[in-house]
Length: 181
Image 1 (cartoon, rainbow, N blue to C red):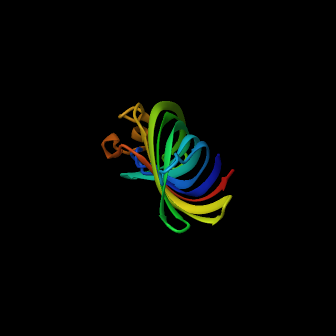
Image 2: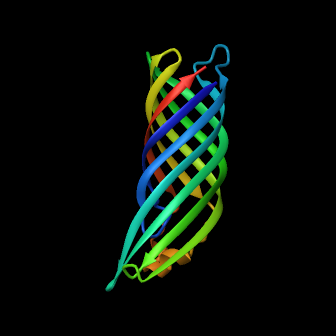
Image 3: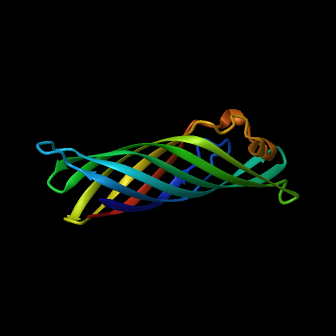
């Protein structure tokens, strides 16, 4: 079994205004190593949060956009030994995302809000260093692809951002601490 906490930086590249901010997550897993194999396989459940903010300058107007993103997913983690206490990990999970957005338009003249959800495909890559048999630290990068968020983001459009500027994935770079049971 494993229990992991990660904290770091998130970039909302799937949104037209490219907001960024604090990202955190929790991963729980159950699995192990088949006899004779160097790889370890875990079924995992992941819950992550990001608080993102960005701004849009459109002509004479300045708008601020905030996004609270909550992702939950289930999938597979594979851990491969690199050398001695170093490990490489790959996660592939499927789940959902919920995004609560708010925009302050025209320097505070108006406030609009929206709430949206989507199916989520998530990939994670990372390294871990085992400090102890039951504890490791690491770093990871996550790619979260919300497949059903509207291509045309009405909130970002109202703030002055072009929906054509939205990418397909949100990114996260975090440091992690993992307990191994």
